[in-house]
Length: 323
Picture 1 (cartoon, rainbow, N blue to C red):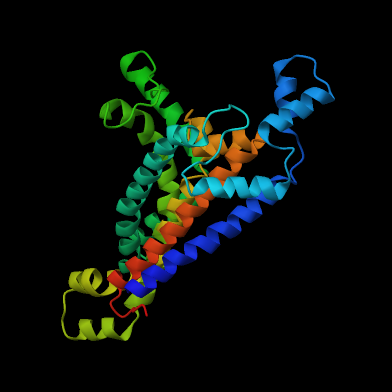
Picture 2 (picture 1 turned 60 degrees about the horizontal axis):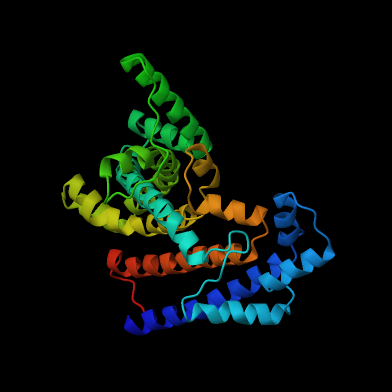
């Protein structure tokens, strides 16, 4: 187990290095010049000399290999670089938004687990009954419904409901407050995007739970347990559920990693300043250093999430052994 863990942790290094090479050199192929964007945005006249000075200040006149070496070398001292657009340290820019995206991802994941696993189990146990049809309808609707569109419906529902009950519409706060500072205001702001995202998230996990449970309930050891008179609740909870959880855990892990950088439109709908919104802004501004740092952050989250999922396999299924 420990040997496997060490090997997987060592594999993180070449994986992240490969991602760094790809994102660094592919970013240089994207049309656009950040100096032209910055100087044009200032509204002042600029010529070729102004562009050369700007590129020299940003280090863009150095060779690509030198820029790459300086960027990678900064990782080992905890320096992610400086934003080419704002001039601020990238670590500070990301830290301001990372806690927002992380909390939404955790809340959406928790909501998905609480909702999807019981619904998936009920749908499998009561297959082809009205319970199964209701669960399948809800899950199909969740998959087909974009989370940002559901978010718009939630906002409209809040406005209309509060207008009808209190006479004045209520909107969630627009200024982020950490949960340890003011839990009520924090949840009033982030619970709605978490529900909108978690519903679609839970729909995928529900379908996977139902499918995995149906496969396990057809196994011979389940039939043997039933023939011995074991209670159906014990069969489902003790024998079937843990063995059916492996693909469900995989889906949940992948979706969690995706949520850390893929909530672009949802963040726009709820006016959240998260990682996804920062990602889009950095690409539009040709902020190479910011995009590179964000891609590496998301890649690291994916790698570590997959590692955690692999380790959970052995706990869920004792037959799995790592050597």
